[in-house]
Length: 228
Image (cartoon, rainbow, N blue to C red; front, side, top):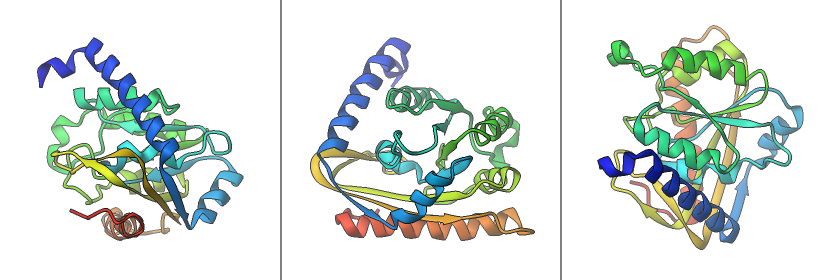
C-alpha cells in the first residue's frame, strides 16, 4: 500500500504503534520461563545475540529490560516495510542496524547484508543485537545462515527467545505476525547457546531452528495462543 510508505505517514503510524505496544506491555500479565539464563547473560555484560521469529517482532521490546540489560539494537530490513518497523522499535529504545540476512538464492540482490554484518559485529562489541533469523521474507520459522555466521564470527552467546500473548491480533502477512492486545496473558521463554566449535553453518541453522521453535511453542502453550 503505497500511501503507507510515505515517510510522514510512516512516522505518525510508527509513533502510534509504539505507544500502543507500551500500553499493552504494561497491562499484560507476563509469565517468565527459564529467565535465569537471560539474567546470567545480562549480569555478565558484553555482546549477545537475541533471536526470535519474525512473527513476534511486535512483542519483542517486552523481553529486554533496558534498566539492567546490555544496550540493544535490532537488525531490520532495508525494505520500506522494514523502515516502518525500525521507527516503531527505535521509539521504544532499540535503534536499528539496517540490512537483510544473507539469502543464498538471491545473493545478487542482497539488501545491505554485508554492511549489516559489519555493523552488527561492531554492535556486538558493545551490547546486544536482536535478529529475526527467518526474515525479512521467510520461509517462516526457518533459520537462514546469517545468525550462525554472526555467532561464529563474534563468539557471542545466543539467547533464543519465545514470545507469546493472548488475546492478540494475527496479521495476514507471510509470517502471520502477532500484535499484542491489552489486559491479556503473555509469556517469555528463554534458552541459550554458543556456536559449536568446528560445526557447519547449515547444521547449526537446523539445530537452532528446532531450539527457537521449542521456546516459542512453550510460550504459546503458556498463553494458549494457537500456533499457525
